[in-house]
Image (cartoon, rainbow, N blue to C red; front, top):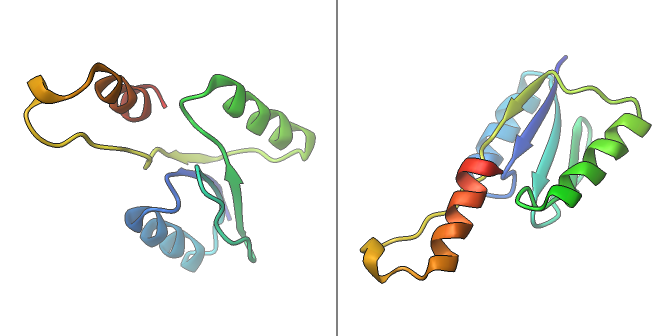
Length: 102
């Protein structure tokens, strides 16, 4: 059994990945902006991966509970649709923060 950190667990792809990992008897540590249900081998945390303080608090909690991570799946992502010249700067920065830096 591996401890697998999965970001974007609440989205459709995140849910599919989560259930496949659970089917393979792994422990899933899910991160998202919204809480998901905890059950056997599925532990969920509300963490904004674009906020350094949120991420640090999460890893402090894991260290305190002596939980190690074997695999990371960076599944979180957002999109901005349409012509980029009509996108607001904040929208472009948000996409970059989640998709590249998160």
